[in-house]
Image (cartoon, rainbow, N blue to C red; front, top):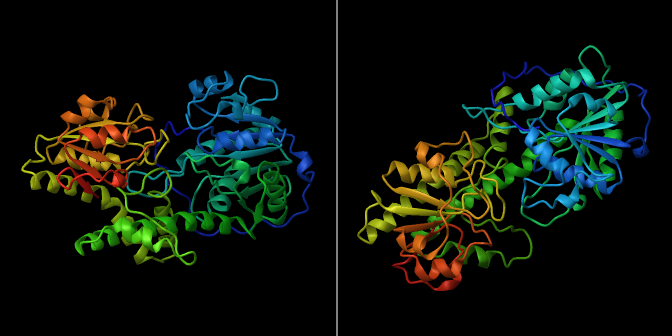
Length: 462
């Protein structure tokens, strides 16, 4: 289900909801009972999951509020270029049955919720999409069903927010309706089958956990069961907070190494030869996407509910948010060092997707970078082989003309006309030879041109 309405929703009372009693379930047990699986939300998470259940020879109903998306999937197409539509075989016998009709959830033995969990305008968790979906689904749920939430969220969401909305006063949790949590673990742009990625599962009660473990064992090779849903919810946040903190750390260290006259990437490459106790993180323009910039704020919000705080996490969030602004300043410094002002300069951003080889520009560092460059007086244009429009609602001070703009072609004329080119996202489709051969000045945030031995007057690592 897509988030066409991002109206922020007031979250429920933070008081803990009692654990669901381990009632004797009135539903059938074992993986065999899951003949029909519903997937609500056919996006980056839902579609691969639907494909995994189809591979397990289950009937799969896919639900989404976007009628155009549903029609495309039903016709055997894909709106996500990194996913092969053969995965869900839309329009074929035994393939994904895509629909906007939520009443058909009654046909499902299990329902997987793969919904967006963004931030509101104040940077707080916005469970509006999840709550609206739960209210819409509730009248159509029946006794004996399992509902599993896969969206990243704060510990307690499944128990305190989702389960009461689903059960209402019609169904008894733990006996008639089973509810569990299993966080998504997708990595768009990498050729890793969903089936190969281990999954966590935690239920609201023993029966819910058992059922969810049975269900997910159909779709993935390894399921790790945890004692309760809150552990799985916190584990997902922990995974991404770990990355956010390390990204902030390596960004700060990169500035330190430059001040010492050292190449940060050379230092990190050397450290990465250690075969234990070290994982290499490399500097860039800042984290992006729907996980790393968002998930740490879910954890700090949850901590604040109980009067706790993490200074390290707060500082990491602030550091990561300001990284694109430092890149913009570095572009201005590089131009000034070459006798050119940023005011009126034509700056070409290469890659606006949040990571390489995907078409998703949500929360991309390219957006605040473009906003900062525009605010400093630059003429900003952009090129991305995978993105045709900038995401709606993420304007970062950009003029409407830039918000509505389309990518310029990556050709010799564009490269030569730019006063500065900033490599923001290093897609494999970018013609690095063209850039290295004809760019006047390259600010390289990804180390994409390290091997070209460009002269310092034309190349600035950032």
